[in-house]
Image (cartoon, rainbow over all chains, first blue to last red):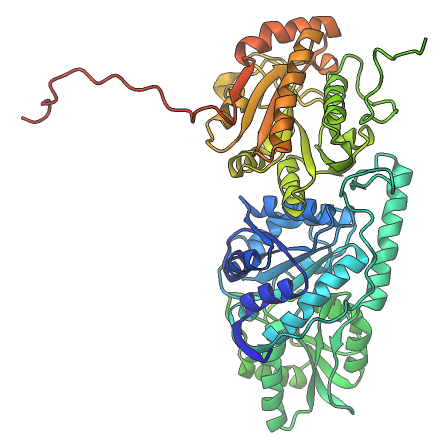
Length: 363
Length: 268
């Protein structure tokens, strides 16, 4: 199949189907709705099932039931809807169920707006629901990368028996770009048979019970220990980062993900024209955060500028990675306004003049 | 002469002790379900869904696969299972706080979509697990841990009649209410559950059996008195019966009498 000119949301749906997803449960919300609509058209064509749930709360629990029965299953929503799903995501993680959840982020908080945002970073990467758990979080910066990451998301979910969040912003969901859908490929991680799934018990395997309740504190501690070991393995093995393409010393390192990283590449051109040697470090996995790669790249630069469509959320992880070894500036916008390359370039120049200046917010 | 057990444990019930209080109805209801799973030979293709509430550990008691749902979400979890695997027999077990309060949206829409599942709804007019708080099904003037002066219907409304509420929907196949506080009622309840199970076996849509149950611990009554309280307080408000069958007609409103008058009022 050649290149297709397709909207991000629809490409995400198509990529999920090509990854073997045959079940979708969701609820309408802008700017995600085209995923839902696409799945309602496409899934019946491939023998799958689309179901519009009565709420995001119900959708994520349908996801739980289907994942527990061994199916490859996904849902998609946007920020306020994802907040409603957080109870269910905690249960998915607690019961160790594989599922893919796409968040096409819009500006918040509360009802916020329907325009793009990146302010769900902390919710996505630090758990989001109650209890000690992490989702694997993948953040595409183009429609093509969203397509590639979708199959990986399903493979990683199945491999680790853990929910995987694909964290898009409204731009990636709404933009139309040429995309190449890859031919069928083997899973990116080995997949074991789902012997734990509730498929009916005839005594030939242990009885399958999907559950996150452990009333015995010792057993709950052991369950948490097992989960933490798994999250540790994910943190070690699943780091994805587009590191700077150039070598040598830098005046400035930009750190950005998703659409902000696309904007940052244009800003790099403007900075180069002004004689400033800058480069971009782009985390693709947000959990695990590529701390070592960011620290390595920061060590080459005089200063670091974090760019996000938020008040500075990934900024916290960059600070943890870089510490006080380099001055770290921040540029962000929140109203749903996509950052302009010129604004990034100007913020970069101000940072280089006076590294003590803090832009926008983010403390 | 070979011994024949007149009263044996159903195969679908695991040989374990339950955590239920003395006199609690859950044990009876579990047994009725297990007997029917045996009767229909369904255990090997059954996935149960346990609620949050006193039956939260139901997954430890049945010889079937099980999923534990978040509070109130059993109908959504059941939907996910059945849509993923239509060949499985999916059985959700819910209490009154779980189903009629926090899970009101999930049960309403699950029923209205006509998911091909069975729901066993246990109504004991209280929150048992958390210690006897007021449920949406608690009766007017019923004293509970959160209605110490008795449920004030002026402040908290009247108890929700779930069977009647869901019967207002066109889609569901079978809706009934039984009781299990005494053997003769339990036998009747088993017949209702049998009809509900048969609906799913025959790939008909949604069925729900509401079962009036006793909670001696939280009602503060010995089991025999609790049974009498149920008969005195619950039966008049929650009539037993079959509300909806696959063959039954769609419920039509009672016709209004044609208003008296000439039809010319206000036309002057």
